[in-house]
Image: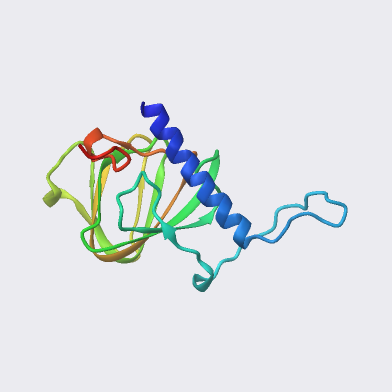
Length: 170
């Protein structure tokens, strides 16, 4: 079942990325139909396309794909807008994760602990990195925008399966 859920999340991110890429990206094929060499990618804040968070994240946040495809191997970057009190329960990823707080703040608790009073407060401009399989959770304080960069395929595994928003409610 875990593999099915993981595959579903990867597929969701892949489809999300594909849809955004098709909407925003110019064709890379020349007149003869041959693929052109990759070019640089520049995206102003006004050009970012926001959508609902994928099923692996709790409802209430908005997500924008900035680079890559989280459903495939390789580097990707997503941006997340989350409301006050937004919580991502204790979870881990099979690859390292890099976080940059752009606005607002959140508390992040690393490891197996559950006492959020021992969490680290990250405010605008902060950066954090978690190695692969590092258990962590976060709670936003105020409306918060942050950016996540990692190597795909992106997988989120909740420590307590009951916290997984992809699971049907009992």
